[in-house]
Length: 120
Image (cartoon, rainbow, N blue to C red; front, side, top):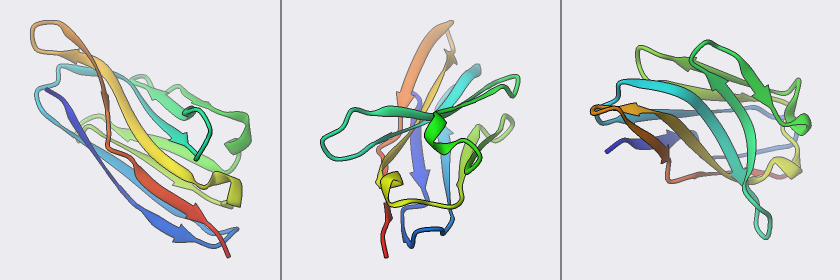
Protein backbone atom coordinates (compact mmCIF):
# COMPACT_ATOMS: atom_id res chain seq x y z
CA UNK A 1 0.00 0.00 0.00
CA UNK A 2 1.37 3.39 -1.01
CA UNK A 3 0.95 6.13 1.56
CA UNK A 4 1.57 9.82 1.01
CA UNK A 5 2.35 12.45 3.60
CA UNK A 6 2.24 16.18 2.90
CA UNK A 7 4.09 18.92 4.71
CA UNK A 8 3.99 22.68 4.52
CA UNK A 9 0.76 23.73 6.16
CA UNK A 10 0.69 27.45 6.62
CA UNK A 11 -0.94 30.81 7.00
CA UNK A 12 0.58 33.41 4.71
CA UNK A 13 -0.24 36.97 3.74
CA UNK A 14 -1.28 37.84 0.20
CA UNK A 15 1.78 38.06 -1.98
CA UNK A 16 3.68 35.62 0.19
CA UNK A 17 5.20 32.26 -0.63
CA UNK A 18 4.85 28.74 0.64
CA UNK A 19 6.35 25.42 -0.33
CA UNK A 20 4.43 22.16 -0.04
CA UNK A 21 6.11 18.78 -0.15
CA UNK A 22 4.85 15.23 -0.40
CA UNK A 23 6.68 12.00 0.32
CA UNK A 24 5.70 8.42 -0.34
CA UNK A 25 6.18 5.22 1.58
CA UNK A 26 5.48 1.67 0.52
CA UNK A 27 6.57 -0.50 -2.34
CA UNK A 28 6.61 1.36 -5.63
CA UNK A 29 7.87 0.23 -9.01
CA UNK A 30 7.26 3.50 -10.81
CA UNK A 31 5.37 6.76 -10.39
CA UNK A 32 3.91 7.91 -13.65
CA UNK A 33 2.25 11.13 -12.55
CA UNK A 34 2.56 13.24 -9.43
CA UNK A 35 0.06 15.98 -8.83
CA UNK A 36 -1.29 18.56 -6.47
CA UNK A 37 -5.01 19.16 -6.09
CA UNK A 38 -6.87 21.61 -3.93
CA UNK A 39 -10.34 21.92 -2.54
CA UNK A 40 -11.85 25.06 -1.10
CA UNK A 41 -14.97 24.95 1.10
CA UNK A 42 -18.06 24.41 -1.00
CA UNK A 43 -16.08 23.77 -4.16
CA UNK A 44 -15.01 20.70 -6.09
CA UNK A 45 -11.48 19.42 -5.87
CA UNK A 46 -9.42 20.73 -8.76
CA UNK A 47 -6.08 19.82 -10.26
CA UNK A 48 -3.54 22.55 -9.52
CA UNK A 49 -0.44 21.09 -11.13
CA UNK A 50 0.94 17.77 -12.29
CA UNK A 51 4.25 16.41 -13.48
CA UNK A 52 5.01 13.23 -15.36
CA UNK A 53 7.96 10.91 -14.90
CA UNK A 54 9.52 12.59 -17.91
CA UNK A 55 9.19 16.03 -16.40
CA UNK A 56 6.26 17.37 -18.40
CA UNK A 57 4.18 19.74 -16.33
CA UNK A 58 0.62 20.97 -16.42
CA UNK A 59 -0.93 23.83 -14.46
CA UNK A 60 -4.40 25.20 -13.98
CA UNK A 61 -4.60 28.62 -15.58
CA UNK A 62 -5.12 30.44 -12.29
CA UNK A 63 -1.68 29.46 -10.97
CA UNK A 64 0.44 29.68 -14.11
CA UNK A 65 3.45 31.85 -13.55
CA UNK A 66 3.05 31.70 -9.78
CA UNK A 67 3.31 28.01 -8.86
CA UNK A 68 6.03 25.55 -9.78
CA UNK A 69 5.82 21.79 -9.40
CA UNK A 70 8.95 19.66 -9.19
CA UNK A 71 9.74 16.05 -8.43
CA UNK A 72 12.64 13.96 -7.22
CA UNK A 73 12.25 10.49 -8.67
CA UNK A 74 14.96 8.95 -6.51
CA UNK A 75 13.38 10.22 -3.31
CA UNK A 76 9.80 9.72 -4.56
CA UNK A 77 8.90 13.25 -3.56
CA UNK A 78 7.03 16.08 -5.20
CA UNK A 79 7.02 19.74 -4.21
CA UNK A 80 4.84 22.70 -5.04
CA UNK A 81 6.44 26.12 -4.75
CA UNK A 82 3.70 28.72 -4.45
CA UNK A 83 4.59 32.37 -4.94
CA UNK A 84 2.50 35.53 -5.11
CA UNK A 85 -0.23 33.81 -3.16
CA UNK A 86 -3.74 35.19 -3.32
CA UNK A 87 -6.69 34.78 -0.96
CA UNK A 88 -8.39 32.65 -3.60
CA UNK A 89 -5.56 30.13 -3.26
CA UNK A 90 -6.89 29.28 0.19
CA UNK A 91 -7.81 25.61 0.23
CA UNK A 92 -6.85 22.18 1.43
CA UNK A 93 -4.08 20.88 -0.81
CA UNK A 94 -3.71 17.19 -1.59
CA UNK A 95 -0.88 15.37 -3.32
CA UNK A 96 -1.65 12.47 -5.62
CA UNK A 97 0.56 9.77 -7.09
CA UNK A 98 -0.40 7.41 -9.92
CA UNK A 99 1.91 4.57 -10.75
CA UNK A 100 2.74 0.89 -10.55
CA UNK A 101 3.32 -1.22 -7.46
CA UNK A 102 4.82 -4.73 -7.23
CA UNK A 103 2.78 -7.31 -9.09
CA UNK A 104 2.13 -4.79 -11.86
CA UNK A 105 -0.67 -3.36 -9.78
CA UNK A 106 -1.66 0.18 -10.63
CA UNK A 107 -2.14 2.53 -7.73
CA UNK A 108 -3.72 5.95 -7.30
CA UNK A 109 -2.89 7.29 -3.85
CA UNK A 110 -3.78 10.48 -2.03
CA UNK A 111 -2.27 12.37 0.84
CA UNK A 112 -4.33 13.42 3.82
CA UNK A 113 -4.37 17.07 2.79
CA UNK A 114 -2.70 20.15 4.19
CA UNK A 115 -4.37 23.50 4.75
CA UNK A 116 -3.12 26.64 3.06
CA UNK A 117 -4.69 29.92 4.15
CA UNK A 118 -3.86 33.19 2.46
CA UNK A 119 -5.09 36.11 4.50
CA UNK A 120 -3.97 39.45 5.83
